[in-house]
Amino acid sequence: MRDVERDKTKLGLCADCRYAQRIESSKGSVFTLCTLSKSNPRFPKYPRLPVLACKGYRRQTVGDGKASN
Image (cartoon, rainbow, N blue to C red; front, side):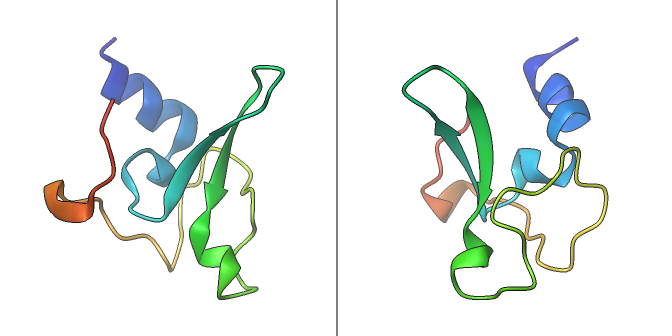
C-alpha cells in the first residue's frame, strides 16, 4: 500500500486537508492538530481519527506551503 493510501485510511480527510498539522511529541507520539480549532471552537483541536466528514475540510493544494510526505 502506498504512503498516501495508508495516510488516507489512517487519517481520513485530515490526510490531505490544508488545516491539518502533524504534531510529534518529545516522546515520539504523533498527533493531528486541526488548526481551525484556533479560531472556531466547533472544530476539535485533536479530532478523533479517521475523520470521515468535516465542514472545514479544504483539500491541500501545491501552493499552500504545506510539505507533502
